[in-house]
Amino acid sequence: MKRTVSGDPEPKGWLGLAFILPGFLFILVLFLIPLAMTIWMSFYNWPLLGRRKFIGLENYVELLGDTQLWNSLGFTMLYTVLVTAAIFAVAFPLALFVDKPLRSAGFFRTIYFMPVVIGFGAASTLWMWLLNPDSGVFAQILRGIGLISSAPRPLESFWPAMAVIILMVVWKTAGFTMVILLTGLQSISNDVIEAAKIDGAGVFARFRRITLPLMRNSLVLALVLNVTSSMLAFDQFFIITQGGPENSTISAVFSIYLASFSSYRLGYGSALSFVLLVVLVAISAIQFVLLRDRPEES
Amino acid sequence: MSGPSPRSNDASAGERLGQWLFLIVSLLLAIFFVMPIVWSVANSFKPAAEALANPAALFSKAFSLENYRRLEHVGAGWYVYAGNSVMIAIGTVVLTVLVAVPAGYGFSKFRFPGQSLLFVLIMATMMIPFQSILTPLFLILTFLGLQNNLVGLVLIYVTFQLPFSVFMMRNAFDAVPRALIEAARIDGASQITILRRIMLPIALPGVATVALFAFLNSWNEFLAALIFLSDQNKFTLPIMLVNVSSGLYGIIDWGALQAGIVVTMIPCIILFLLLQRYYVRGLTAGAVK
Image (cartoon, rainbow over all chains, first blue to last red; front, side, top):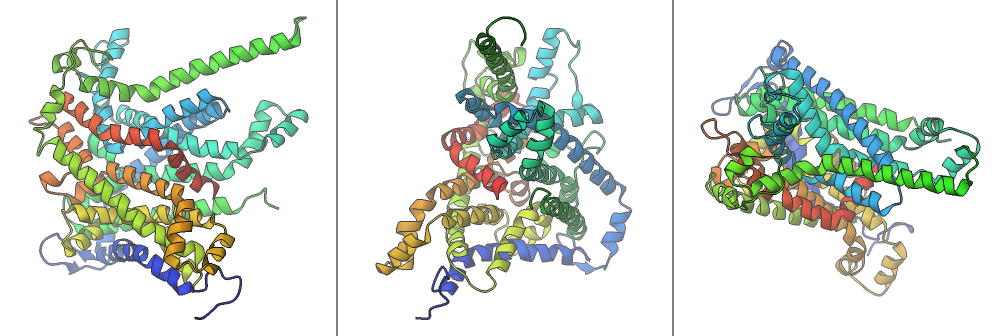
C-alpha cells in the first residue's frame, strides 16, 4: 500500500475521485456538454425536424436587428431593477423587525417565510385568481370598501400588470431575502453595537456605519440571488400576463422559450441563450469584484 | 423621557408600548403573507356559487368537495399528476442524495490532483442557470430516448441540484474530526464502514437539508417540465395548474383551480413546517461561507 506525505487526510487519494465520479458524470453529460452545444448550435439554422445548416454568424446578425428581443431584454432589466428594489424595501425592514430573541419573533419569521416554499407555478395561478375581476378576492374587497365601482383589470395595461407581478413576487420571495439578511444581522456581535452606543452614535449612524458594512456579505449575496433569479424570470410572465399586453411582458427566458419551443428555431434559441448567459456571467463577475474588495479586512 | 416620574416605571411603560406595537405590526404583516394561502384553501372547499358570490369569506355554510371531484376530470385526473409529481420528487431526492453524499465525502476527506478544478466545474453549474442550456438539453434527452419521460426530467433536476448539494455535503463532512477517522482506521475499519458508521451519523443533518431542497425544487419546477413533458398523462402538478388556469373554451374553472393549488402547495408547507431547521441551515450555508 502506498502512503502519501503525512498530514494528507487520506492515504488513498484516488479513491476520492471514484466517489466524485458519478456526480461529475451528471455535470458532464447534462451541463458541460449542453453548455458547449449551446455555442455550437448558435452557428446553425437548426429546425426541430429536417436538416441543420451551418450559417456562421447569421443568427447573431438577426439577433442584433430583432426588436422584440431587445424589448424583452430591456423589459427583463427594468423588471429586475424594480422587483429587486421592492424586495429589499420589504425584506430589510422585515429582517430588522424580526431580529429579536423573542419566541413570537421566531413564529412570525416562519409565517413570513411560508410563501417561499410554494412554487412559482402555484403562486402565479393563486394570484391570477386573487386578481381576477369576476370572482377575485381583491376585486371584492376593493368594491366592498367602496374604493372602486367596477372591478379593476390590471393585466390589460403594462404598468398595472408590472405592479401586480411585483406584488406577487414580493409576497412570494421577501421571506427568503429576509432570512439571508437576518443571518448577516445576527453575525454582528452586540459588543460592537454597545460600544458605539457608549460613544454616543445615534440609531442611524450606528446603522450606516456599523450594521451595513458588517453585513456586507449577506447584502451582496441577497442582491446577487435576487438579480439572477429576476433576470431568469419566466413562470409568472408565462402564467399571469402570458407575455401581454401586446407582448410587453415577455422576459428574456420567455423569448428563448418562444424561439426554441414555439417556433422550433433551435439554432436561434441557442444564440439567444448564449447572449443571456454572457449577461449573467458578467453580473456574476461584478459580484465577485464586489465581494473581493472588502475594506474592513486588514 | 423627561418628567419627575420614576425612571424604571417610565422605561417599563415604554417597553410595554413597544411590545404591543411589535405585536400589532407583526400581525398585520402576517396577514399579508398568510392570507392568500388561507383564501385559497377556504375557497377550495366552497361550492361554486358561494365562491363566486363571496370569495373573501373564510368560512362558508356549505362545505363541499365538488372542486376536488371536478379536478378528477381535468386531463388525466389530478391524482395522475400528483402521482407523477411524487415520483419525480422522490426520484430526485433519492438520486441527489446517492450522488451528492459520496461526492461531498470525496471532496472533503481526500486529496488528489485536479480536485479543485473538478470542484470549480461542479460549482459553475450554480452560476450558469439551466434556463440558458435548455435547447441542447432537449436534444440530448431526445438522443438518450428520455425526452417526454419522467426519468429524463429527474436526471435534469438532479444535475441542477448537485452543486448546492455537493457543497452542503462537503461542509458537513468537513465537520467530522479527523482524529475520529484515524482512530477508526487504526481499529481496522474499512472505507465503507468509516463512511457508514462514523461519517454519516454526523453528516445526517446535511443530508436532510439536501433532501428537503431536492424535494421542494423538483416538486415546484415549472419550465423544464413544461418543455420536456409533452404527453398529457406525464404532466406534473404545476403543469396541470397552468392548464386549468388557461381555461377550457375561454372559461376558467376557478374552483377546480383552487383545489389544484391546495394539492400542490400544502405538501411543501407541511414539509417546511416540519423540517424548518434544515431549510434555514441550507440558506445560511450560502450566507456565511
